[in-house]
Amino acid sequence: MARAAHPDAMKPKTPGRTRTAPPMAPGEFPFAGRYRAYTLFDWTGIIYLLLGFVALRVVWALGDGESAWLAVQGQLENPLYLAFHLLSLVSVIFVGVRFFRLFPKAQPARIGPLKPPPQLVIHVALYAAWIGVAGGLALVLAGGIF
Amino acid sequence: MSEKKTFRITRFDPDQDEAPRTQTYEIPVDPDWKVLDALNFIKDEIDGSLSHRWSCRMAVCGSCGMMVDGKPTLTCKKPLSEYGSEISVEPLANFPIVRDLVVELDGFMEKFESVKPWIIRAKERAVEEGTHRQSPAELEEFKQFSMCINCMLCYSACPVVANEPEFLGPAAIALGHRYNMDSRDEGAHERNEVFRGEGTVFSCSYANECSEVCPKHVDPAAAVNQAKINAVLDWATGFVVTRGKE
Image (spheres, rainbow over the protein chains, first blue to last red):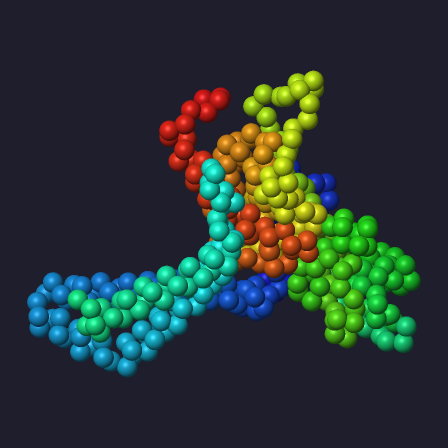
């Protein structure tokens, strides 16, 4: 076991008579085994935070007039920005796939008389919606529609 | 028993040791043995001071959960032939260690009790009215969550349990959810208040490890995340529905 857990983890409110050794965290946490994917999933939050700052900067430039907007567009062609956007894309796909894997079974067994459809139907619907929305946005950005 | 395997076992004597230490045993093993058989061999033949919990030897009682090669495991389940030549055996992670491979259970029992794992009725049914009838479809809604054997492997795998002592944890929430889904029960609102309280279900970050290690395929992660939605619905409907005691 690699590292200590919180010293009060699973500690009873009334301590027993025997002295106990403090709890240890699972040996593979946080960077080995299946925990690696979970930790990566958590870390993607940092990427989204940075992406938010980039988006704010772009919107800010839009308000500062055409020259500022063109300057930012030029900066976004920097290989560092392109690499960051590629990393963001990989993060979104990773989080999306993980979320879609876990989401169906988290549905409530029923809400009143309503029951969720089979898990396979939810899986297919999620991926179909994702591909549909992504495809639609790509068409808009490419000038295919509107 | 020609093959030999080495076991690296965590030892802790609260009267003598400042902190847990590791002791190594090399023993002859039968390939059909489970880790539990090896522990029993060590205790019976080599070192009688080794302490570990076990009972049924058939993955039903939930007593023999330990960290084997770093993973929460029922030591009576997997044959030694599926492990390497060196096997590490440690007490369940995230629990205070009482002695050697034995962990403190009282904290777990407190969390269990707090979710009111019994059928709550607004008004008890008179005996002459007969039994509560339940259809197979109604049973199916919670049956999976009632298969828990309280082995605590899910608590050992959960990164939230490791970091947030107040968190109710997977098995307790799954058990509370099991009663919330029971057609005979009328205590969902009481339990949902517990779910929204100090050990809130919303602490769960859906690592899904609890379900990965569950030896009975209870899927506590599904229960916890269904409980989150139900707790929100219960909170929201509280604004428009007057409840019995209010």
